[in-house]
Length: 129
Image (cartoon, rainbow, N blue to C red; front, side, top):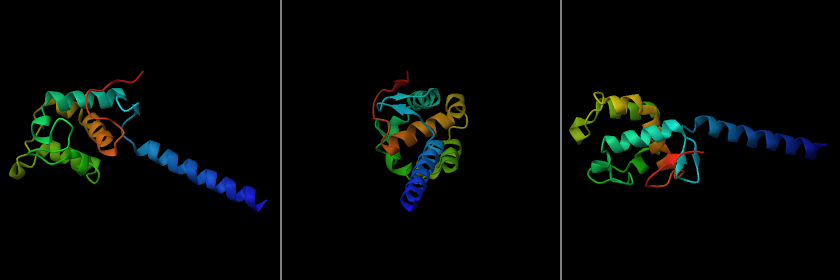
């Protein structure tokens, strides 16, 4: 009886942890390069805003910092503030005047978070099936 109870508790905790992770992950990805619509729109905004000029084609940093590293600790709200307002003293322009970036800010965060988590591979991505 105790063994079954313990197994049920462990299963419940594992399921709960999995559900919490699924709910907090802002992106969906298959095979490392197929993503949900919002994340794909975020990747397109990344490309159109030419963010790679400073952050590198694989988001690993150049003149600007590595977003792979930054998104490990930078939360969604702080990310949005930096993109919207910029960090002019550090060379980061504000993008609040870019309709494509602002309309796809959640997707841009999702894309970069997926890259930072290692779930989305560098390079071209496409829509999930």
